[in-house]
Amino acid sequence: MHDLSDVQLLRDYAAHGNEAAFREIANRHAALVYSSALRQVTSRDLARDVAQSIFTDLARKAPALARALTENSSLIGWLYRSTRFTALNQLRDDRRRLARERHVMQHFDPASETAPDWDQVQPVLDEAMADLSDEDRDALLLRYFKNHDFRAIGSTLGVSDDAAQKRVSRAVERLREFFAKRGVNVGAGGLAVVISANAVQAAPAGLAVSISAAALAGAAATTSTLITATTKTIAMTTLQKTLVTATVAVLAGAGIYEARQAAQLRDQVQTLQQQQAPLSKQVQQLQNERDKATNRLADLVAENSRLKSNPNQMELLKLRGEVTRLKQAENDPTQKTVKAIAGKINQLKQQLDQTPKWKIPELQFITEKDWAAAVWDADLETDDGVRAALSKVRETAINTFLNEMMKAAFKKYLAANNEVLPANLFDLKPYFNEPVSDAMLERYKLLQSGKPDNSADLVRLIANADDEYDSNHGMSINGAWGGRFNRVQSAVEAAATAFAGDHVGQMPTDPTQLVSYLATPIDQVTVKKYLTQILANPPSADMVALQPAVKAYSDANNGGMPKSPSDLLPYVTTPEQKAILQKAERDFPAAK
Image (cartoon, rainbow, N blue to C red; front, side, top):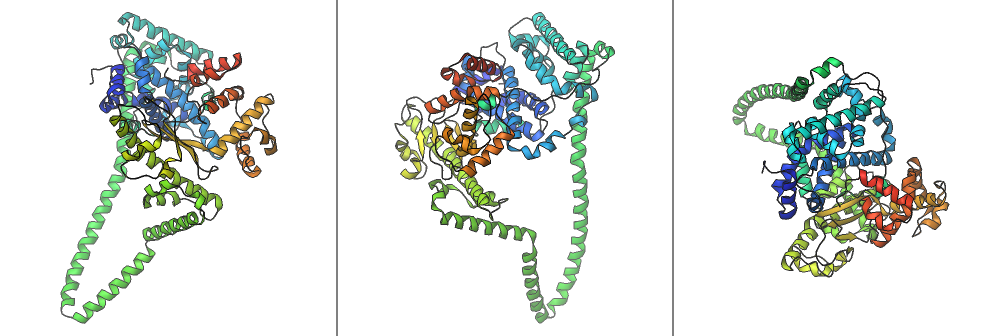
């Protein structure tokens, strides 16, 4: 399997569901994707999320990509473009949802991560890479990000060794010209050294395994709207000093290898030091506990010998011991936490019993552990806190039903019916592992017929218990997904964007201005809450221009939102909209 190309592995997975082939792809490219994401989001946790999202998207789009890619196509180019788009999307989304933490994010200083020269290159490297053509970018990725020789590059790109070398040289020169325009004067050789040594950092342990497992399990696919896809620009830090000297350029060949080895060794030493410190403390603590236990055992042996001669005193000590145990249990922090969580669970269940409209049939599938997760940090003293906690419980129940039950029922039905979908969801009832009610199935809508389309939504939830707090949910044949925004929030956002489209980009400032733009009435207090959030991060002019096409798509697709610019092409009506989509198509890595 190690001898197969990326395209061959992807086709094997798409055609036969070979999970080992997909894991091999993840093992090959997890570090590249993670490092590219880390440079842009500057957070290791966010970089892990972006990497997992990329490989989940790759698993979902595998059939279409396998058809589109040729033997000489480069999968890493697709992965790199996907990473850049998703990272930009993640940053915009985080600014919207975590506006209060913006001050902290702005003061995060990654300067300690790299050498001073790398600090000048890192902030604009991915912008410079994005400015290259696909052919030049792929050549650079293979040479300096994946450390391939020219023979391997030529084989991958379907060209000769000499052609591969010329393409790499041309790409480095264009990259150097881009940096020169930004005020950083550096030779091509020196630029190659610093990129090769720092561009790809070691991915966290287990990242390839976790992201491939999550992708293969059909984790919730991203439901970011096209509004997010049109965000293009992130502020870059000012470039200040000259990158490397002419001497480094002369030593580029040897420097690339040595710098990469040094960087890897520094990471390994730092990791071992971090691991050793807590282990040393733990060993010392265990030795102290051993000594105490040895002394205590000797005392107990002597005490036991003495008590055997006095039965009455033995009984008295037993009673004292029981009293002590009960007092300790009462003061034990763990016991206190367990009792507090149990109390919050009972309180939330009572609230649910008092408000039947918040119940859904899928709640029968959740466990006490799910209840505990919902109330762990919930504030049940406020109405908002109660509704948010109940929404979390319902979300868990819906995902459990879709991922563990409905997905399995569809696979059994398709296997028994020549891979043809049922006429309605009620035909699935005999194929569920345990009985489900009609009331439960009536909450969902079947969106496809005939042979299933693996890249499109198959089922969508059409009845939320609490529209203001519950998110949209649905599933493809590969698994369930859940939306980031609830229906009320999405409706207010769409109304505000439509208002701006009718008023030359001017956003509404009062909830009453949106009354005629809302498909269904929403109380003014709720509209004002979400409008305040929108005004803090208003949509761009491109978003406003595309709003009519987005609405037309949603009306024609049962309320669904487009997943790529190509989805909107049939719905654009102006040259301006078409131009925006064509530009977005170049940045959005959607499979045709």
